[in-house]
Length: 137
Image 1: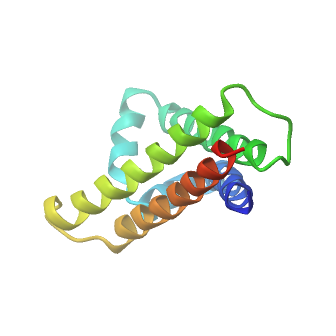
Image 2: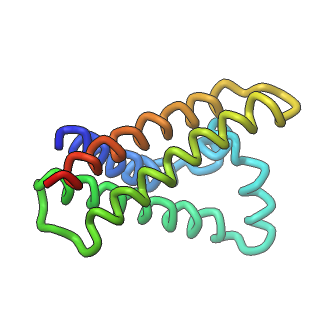
Image 3: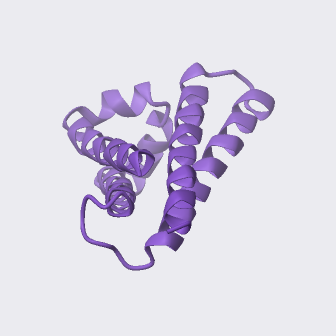
């Protein structure tokens, strides 16, 4: 259960970081590699990059709650076991596909993309291991 607790807290920290980084959004969009995409989104509507970031933060927060719920730190959430494995699958796919794209497809290798992919793999394994533990119960 420690793996789910750790995964849950990491997700909540990521969610909070997304919101805090909106205080200097242009800078953080650039250093994370999404600056150009967010500029194009801002042309559609000036608030779209902010809304998208909050939307993503909400998902990270929900993922965090599922991790904490699976660890027994908060009340049991609906479809807990299924949710844990879906979250694990999302992170593992993100990590695997992101790594492949960064190494084999992108025209220029970018370390921060690879680090995000490795981080996703790590969180995915935390949820997968935790999911296996609660599945056995």
